[in-house]
Amino acid sequence: MAAPIVKIKTQEEIEKMRVAGRLAVEVLDMITPYVKAGITTNELDRLCHDYIVNVLQAIPSPLNYKDYPKSICTSVNHQVCHAIPGKKKLKNGDIINIDVTVEKNGYHGDVSRMFIIGKPSIRAKRLVEIAYECLWLGIHQVKPGVHLSAVGKAIQNYAQSKKCSVVQEYCGHGIGSQFHEEPQVLHYYNPKLEDVLLQPGMTFTIEPMINAGKREVKILPDKWTVVTKDHNLSAQWEHTVLVTEDSFEVLTLHDGEEVFCPSNLKK
Ligand code: MF3
Ligand code: CO
Ligand code: CO
Image (cartoon, rainbow, N blue to C red; front, side, top):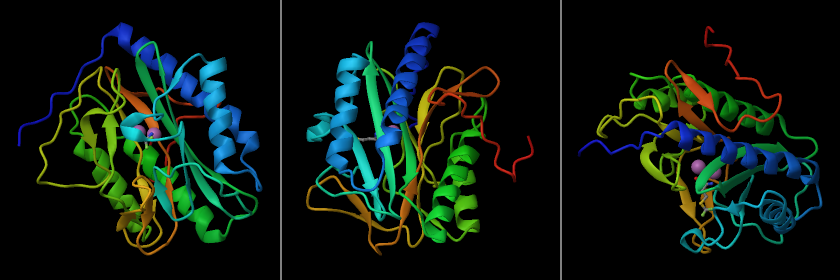
């Protein structure tokens, strides 16, 4: 299989991606105080939709994307990703991933975070933390001259060392003027796939889905919601990343969020 063609963004495009990334983060910051027991995921979707359209004057990228009916994804507990907001109310102890993608001036920014409702179980809290460390371990691999597979290798090694599993059916993705573009960013290592050599100006997401139990997933009859087959918990965090001249820039850091250095990385 031939290596995919990965677009190298110009300075102008990178500036637009910084804007889109910042706006996507703003949506997560706006919604944070509402993410409490008793609210429905539909209500979270409505608040995000209205904020994106009216305040940010941007477009919620998921809405009508391949018939997706809502503006955000809200994946609770054993839901892995792409869960459609609905009537379900959040309750104490739930963990939820809120995934926001916005388009501004023709460019997309994609970010997601985990939220814990009330008091989590010890294993839920642990899973959420491991997934966060996986994301950052992946990000820290990014620099010119490195193969993209280093990202997946680092994530898989760490997740498995913590007795968690990595979902393989969904991956990170190039992002820019398209919501999803080349390359695919695997969160595990597959030696059979052609590897991409990272170059300055590439932009893509890293968004590992980490399961407490087995890695297998299935899609619900709504054709979107992905859940773990064994009904164990799943957690995911996502950032949009730029390859710079010497390392990486995270385009979706929120105010005050530090570049996180997982403890087993000397930095
Ligand atoms: N934001 C998701 C991602 O990280 C994709 C959602 S596609 C949708 O790639 F259609 F489900 F919204
Ligand atoms: Co994404
Ligand atoms: Co996303």
